[in-house]
Length: 102
Image 1 (cartoon, rainbow, N blue to C red):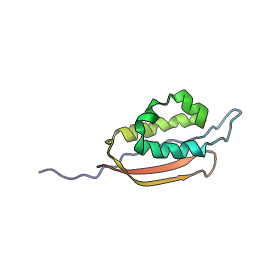
Image 2: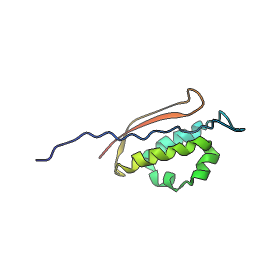
Image 3: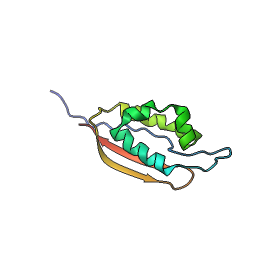
Image 4: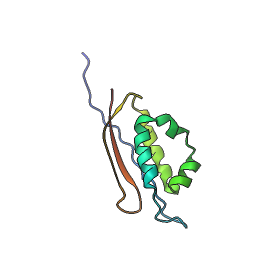
């Protein structure tokens, strides 16, 4: 007999931010918000962005977004958005995306 399981997959890491150098304190809210949309609807475009490009646009520590890729890759392309939230409380963009598997 098959059981129906509920599984949570979490990817974490800062969004846009830089905590050292001449761009200390920079965030890019526009990039972060687009990322939160594309992680759901256009994952292939995100994966195609080289890390160097992400760091230029969103700060050197934004390379942590790669952790989100692992989370998204665990779900099917048909996973749908259940919840999305974004804020910039300090020196990093903070986002949440909850997806439901099809």
